[in-house]
Length: 367
Image (tube, rainbow, N blue to C red; front, side, top):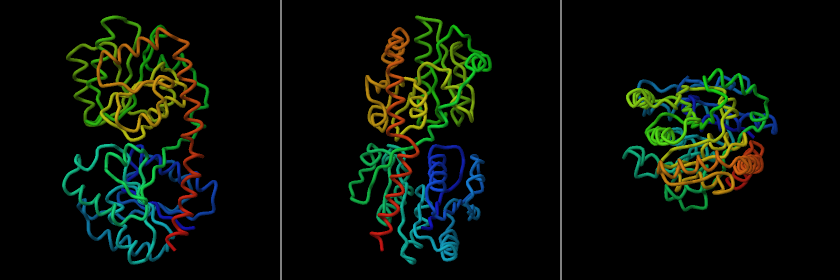
């Protein structure tokens, strides 16, 4: 079986990493011939070069909606002769449609990885989305909440949860040394939030929680891990308001070591698909607190057993943090329950096997 993976870039992101982990799994467990096609030569995940696949860049010429990409992608497909096109995103799906129709190739589209819904999209992007949905052979979401948010009720719509390489979470760490690197005392508990500094994440609430906690106890440090457009504003707010119990680490490649030294994972957000940061915290045995009560977090977190999905309210979050820190047995039990859930439901093996079956079924039914 010959499969083209078609994505805009390999910049840092959950979608990009998920795709690469799937490619790596397929390389190890199938004899499929895989090719990766990019529209920009932007590669953050350099381990793509070790996967042993062809990488083809069909670069946009000057502007985002380059119409020549239709023809250049079609020509490449005429040369490669794929059995399946697997597109990751709205634009790559859109660029794949003429090839799908002219060469009668099934088009699998990873269109949904959030819970924003079409009302949050620009008029142009909403139009692209509707066209993509109509012409795709299979529409994929990484959460049930995503399908609901985008109002997709079609037999060709499917949910495949994210999967992670469990080996990432089985290393031994020098926790004392990590604390020194982070400038965190051994007497302090650590609450970690791993998320991009974007308007989709609520780092303002994260700071509000830290300020409220500081009024009642001085043994907690909050770590914000990531970067983005909102980083400077949030950092300036820390300085202006003299929030002494928050450290912004910037982007970190080895987030596992930071999670390993932490006590609780937190995600202050408006709504999520399936959050990789929640999966990572749970895989390392940390209880998690998420403010995503309408999105995909409820598909990962079992409320009261592996963590909490609660309203975006600083007092509720403070109470939950205090309860977990004051009740070590509960904290450890929740962490262990979460780890078991990730190992049984969100492994790369679980995700990879579902994709293997999907590819075979799609090809058989399409022909």
